Length: 475
Image (cartoon, rainbow, N blue to C red; front, side, top):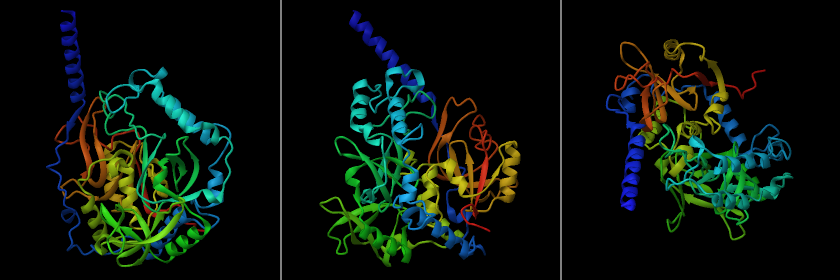
């Protein structure tokens, strides 16, 4: 009898939890929002192929991007440059790598976690002390106490690779009864790097399966078999080829194959850049049996790449946006999909514009106007009047979008391209999920559900003009 009652109680609890989760999530209907780029950017428009920025400015942006990736001069920000790496290897204080990793180990330790801060696995069970202790041992924290640049620790990614907060593929979620938490928000997922991304290897896990690396703008753990070390000869040749001609991949799941198609080296997506030899051949890094990078030639479909940078005009933006629309939201590049910031980073890379990984830093690349002190209606009016299509970023707390023009209704409202998880009411009690890349207007309210807060109504509302870059010396 007691066993029977216990079973009923567990069933009731399970039903209650399921209902609680369902009550925090619904799907936002998109039927009213035209998702055709040709509708918003008609090919017969007189400015369809007109450059959005001067050619000189786009080339300056392109050179800035190459400096971040490949370096080679005193002002560059590449993990292949000693001065850049050494600046980011503090061995003392709260900013040290050892201190940062220690904080992450504490964050994912459930020993003192309560309520909303408990870390759960994919099986909905809280992580045990054994789990985090094994990761702590694998980290080898003492190796990060004294760090100095060593040229032989420079490297490059040999395939697209996930960057993790700690050396594990296990996901970590907060409870999905909390609106905006649970899947897909794996708190251990940092970002995703394309093939051919320069890195610096700072350390290794005890089992050697993971490497702690520095990329052009972030640090984290990657699988060791996704990278190769790069010696001076490789770096010199790669830099030289990159300065001559680079290509950018302009579609998704693009195969990089051996010239006779007997071997597939990798596949990658929009935003991946590699040295270009001709219309269908690229240089790619391949790892040899000593874990050193060597250069191979890869063949790629000619309609899937373009010489970097693509001319920044409505036609080319329309093409890439068309290929991106409807792809699922991927937190931190999860499963090879984009979140809000990686969507824009990869898109703008194709046009030669460097953007950092995190949304809060992306707006620093252009002249910024902070409209946070104004009410939502005035924010939207300003953007509709002063936004520059495809060259204006919109940053709100925890999210970023690209302004692409205005709606064609009587009351013009800004239209955006963005990858967004969803909308929520002001009390943050639930999410109306979009969960993909969309063309979506910024409205004061949405007729589908008036209780949802406007994206323009948060505490932060900033716009940034990428055609007025902050990295160009105007003196």
